[in-house]
Length: 130
Image (tube, rainbow, N blue to C red; front, side, top):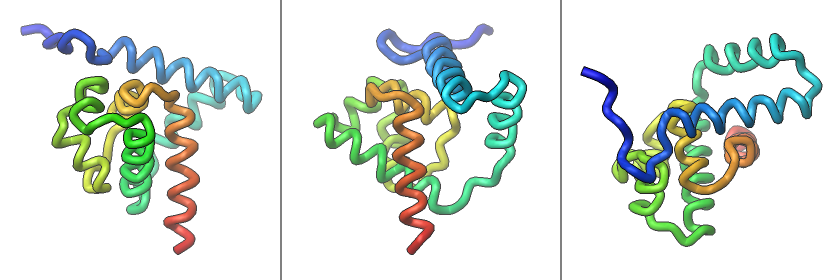
């Protein structure tokens, strides 16, 4: 039995992979990193433990971006291909989304992964300071 296809309109694996690769390339060039250095940074990021404030920061940023764009949770769910209940859990800081989930959220919110993660990092720093 093969992999089930995403419903029409949902960002599939190809769109998620393309967005991720484009953002890593953009960051690599901006920071003057070699491909090997960028690969090492991505591998290190995947190996890191998720600090407790990261899911909360992701949730706050996703909610802010969604509300700024006047989207309902249902609309974000449809645009990202993630379930509405998962979107609720993310916004409440109760879910620890994978990188693929974050990429899908950024596609649904029509922003780059870089923009989303820069906002998350800034919010996380404020949360960690308190």
